[in-house]
Image 1 (cartoon, helix red, strand yellow):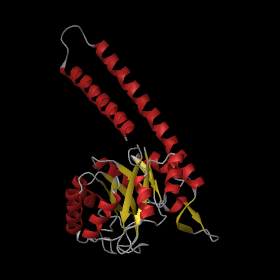
Image 2: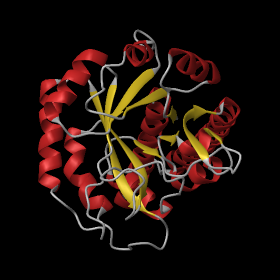
Image 3: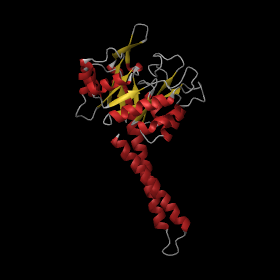
Image 4: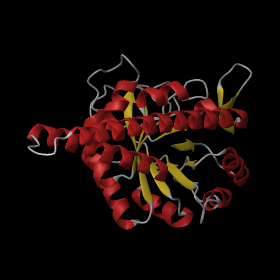
Length: 299
């Protein structure tokens, strides 16, 4: 499973995250006017030639500046987290965002793209078009990330840093629909990521707000990580990873035993079509589960 932590802005923070077992180190550029930050570039380049990955969110939509950002920083992933809807949850100018992403992908094919798919909180906006938006972006994306939609977003026009969880059923539907990995995000902390991943079965988990330090009133402080929380978050994700691996391995063993029993039960002559169909169905299920286990290992 991918563990992704955001608001990593210095090499020291990146090194500490790697030490704790984080896979993807996420950084943020706040301004189109002050995007060239040598210290941040050093942070991004820290993962070069390693198994760890860098991802970068630009909180602006100027295409030429995005090109310059990518040329300067060369992250493993560019991460787009546009709201994609108006304050009523209606899709707004989706074609424009698709075209923007398509242009970036064509210009920088070597850089992966993470696309945030907005999902409301449970009980909010039941007809929200999360899956429709995902369908439009999937051919142009390498990874989806869920995050929590609110009509009063903390950063206007963008999704994220709400500290509130997404509706898990929609996240499950997104995973089922998508042929690319889906990282679960939105209000995840060391305290709830275990239950969230066991429920949703995502390819990974992301945290930003709830792995930050807090002020005396308990409010998260932006761009100040609490590395004890980060370590606990990683540990919780790895525990789920182990549980799911054991669960799938046990299921695979059971299927193989059932297949062997079916094959032993075949008569020497006059095998009936339904018997062959049952064996083929088991073989297909075994093959699919073996691929899933292999894909999990690769991720």
